[in-house]
Amino acid sequence: MKEEFLHFLWKYSLYDQDKLLDYEGNKITVIHPGLYNRDAGPDFFNARISIAGTLWAGNVEIHTRSSHFDMHGHQNDEAFDNVILHIVAENDRKVFNSKGEELLTAELSIDPSLHNRYISLVNNPFIIACQDEIRDFDTILFQHWLNSLVVERLQKKSEMILNIFSETGNDWEETFYRVLSRYFGFRVNTEPFEMLAMALPFRIIRKHADDRFQIESLLYGTSGMLQEGLFREAVTDQYYNDLIREYRILSCKYSIKPLHGWIWKFSRLRPSNFPTIRISQLAGMLSVTGGLFSRLLEVTEIKQLKELFEVDASTYWDDHFVFGTVKKGSPKKTGLQATDIFLVNAVIPLLFVYGKSRGPSEYSERALSFLDQIKPEQNSIINEWAAVGIKAESAHCTQALLQLRDQYCRKRRCLDCRIGYRLVSSGIQLKEQSELLLEP
View 1 (cartoon, rainbow, N blue to C red):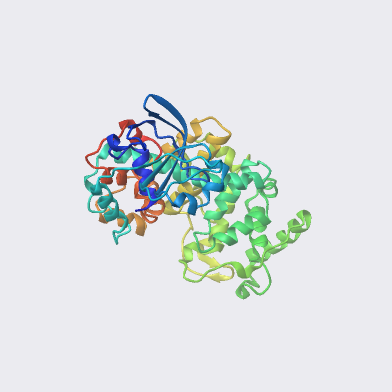
View 2 (view 1 turned 90 degrees about the vertical axis):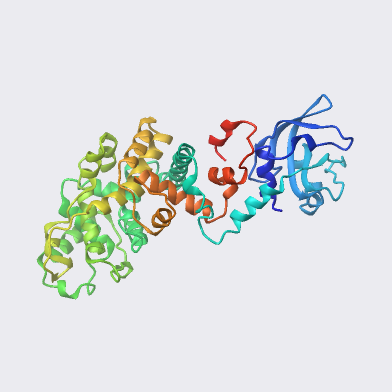
């Protein structure tokens, strides 16, 4: 039996409470199980119990066997001196803290059916372990869980954004520029776009916000795409040579060191996703006087938001995919699907973290509202959910399902999942029913 299962039983009082006894046969009444601790130290802090009319307050440690207390070295650790109760599945040895005081150890009386249901989930061969039961799960509780999951996912992304924010000297415009650039790579060129944004700071681009051609020359030149020999057919191309001349002037002015052009990947990409096209589209977005992030904060409607990030590559790319080679084509717009990817992965998370950390909460609420108005994402993971009967209605739902699958189902964290809780504890009530809607 795993300790995590015992933690679960203790946290939600899913054991025979009448059989929780001390050495003299006195009933141990649990007033509060304590606060679950996932870090170093006792498993539950600040628990409260009552034995024969005496109230005890302190920590609770849990092991499958009492002897594991010594096996883990807790008998020499002062952090465990305030343990008032040692909960185990099997009491096979007396244990003592660093002061030489014996710990009160009590065995949990467990309903075997609970453990059987738990084992059936964690040993299920499918990634979505509850795929046969989830479609019948309570709709309201499921929606509550999805709402929590999408916030959890945004908070995880917030960590990356706040790290960039710190690196940029607390500059939101620079932070947004870096985060947005990252997603222009569409996985294949994520790293080169990140490198480009770091090599060419937004403070330089901001000075040329009213001249798209200059921004393009800065981006193409710093990316290394204008280096000699990379596009041999472009030697006589007028637009290409104009970019080179402009970049020579600007790179000297700002002392910019270009990247190596070979870092960019073109193979196995649709031509419309070539980095040459994406860089021009990025330049279009950055050609905003006053800053793109400032404009973002002013937007209150999803239609306005999408218009802000739906841009065309410059007209040169209407009949080109790479420099110097003419191909019959059409205007290269970012497209609805690409725009939604930018919004879901870069724009909305940054708006969310801005509201949580610096700005009014209305920005975080607006971010969640925008997410609910974007069409559901299409990928293999969302298809997995659809196959088991869970159909996503918006990007808000797909982001929650991605979080559920990646952070809970795949890691078999069924006991931390509200669906898993219900399936394991079926027929047994929580000590406080409202706990079901709290952070697991």
